[in-house]
Amino acid sequence: MNSLQQLENKLDNCIFCKIAAGKIPSKIIHEDEELMAFHDINPAAPVHVLIIPKKHIATLSDCDESHAALLGKMMVLAPKLAQQQGCGYTINDNGSGTGGFKTLFNTGPDGGQEVYHLHMHVIGGPHPWRGQR
Ligand code: 5GP
Ligand code: ZN
Image (cartoon, rainbow, N blue to C red):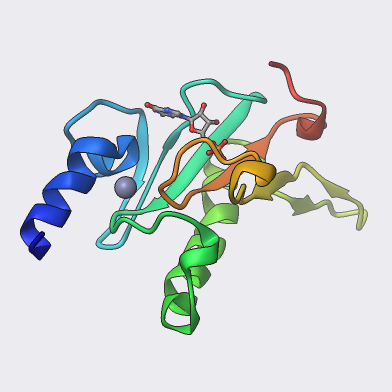
């Protein structure tokens, strides 16, 4: 299989590659050269956003040092999107913190990964770890 065929195969079979390519709709909240972020179709909390690389990477275990910058960009984007979505972490004038969110990578079957295209969950709202599913 040549590289073009491999790309077509991923686009055909990977739901997040299709979203990244605009082949299926999603509620996109961020797009740049390398990353895309959109609302999870089955939110576990009032805010549930997924950040993906546009390039197909199956899991976090497929990443190495060459992916460090990309992973860093995903991490840096998370609090910005959380802020936009109303669940940013802020320090009040009195010094106490409010808001906040959870970030999560599921990896492999025992990690609960369902979609094998790398993604970071950004989950927010009051006590998002309690879930609402
Ligand atoms: P995982 O369990 O792999 O970490 O999470 C996959 C997430 O992708 C799930 O929370 C699921 O709701 C979400 N998801 C699956 N298919 C789609 C889709 O077609 N569109 C969107 N926006 N989210 C999806
Ligand atoms: Zn993919």
